[in-house]
Image (cartoon, rainbow, N blue to C red):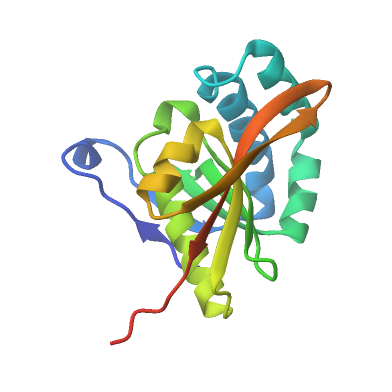
Length: 177
């Protein structure tokens, strides 16, 4: 995946650019922090403190664990000044987006949407016709607005707490030129 700068209006002229690329081992520590803060701070409006703590405890705040996940999933990162500020883990053979997290103070700026666009492109390149994701309530509305179809919800247990998430899918198609 090549690095792509994504300017967003006038604010982009002042703010450092966000670059998108495949994850590197050096991104793992930042991934751990992005995950932790996205859950603990970014999910405050949709999940209780107990739910967020349970959710955050499922994946370690440890670079080694996240580097190991990079071997399991195709991992795309959004970087700012060389630091990972968002990431997406993709299971290409299954057409499944395993995770999608963005640093809380940068949420709502299109970083997650852009990571999804890159993931969709990769899936299309690999001949996958449908993308799937089990999403938190935080991103559910955004997915619906972006053309994803909600298939229902389920409650999953994480460290003794029940968390609601929603199943989504999106049919992928190549534009004919």
